[in-house]
Image (cartoon, rainbow, N blue to C red; front, side):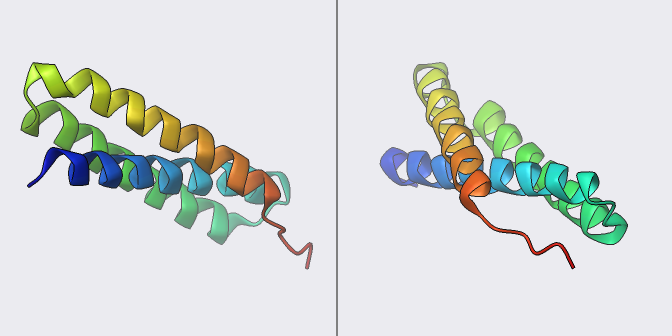
Length: 89
């Protein structure tokens, strides 16, 4: 797979991972047990798949840039999740 495409995938994996993580924290604070458990599970699955792929599939020259791009996605995911509204019902 093209390295640029992989970097894009890692960025969006980071966005999804931290969006889910931040939403999870908000569900925990509102005592929404099922949603907390579900988003926690999804967060870990996305994180582990992305990091496993970075560690095992990339050569050392592309590993560090991939991790930095993933981290930029994580920061973006936090921003987007903080803007996302959760109903208090």
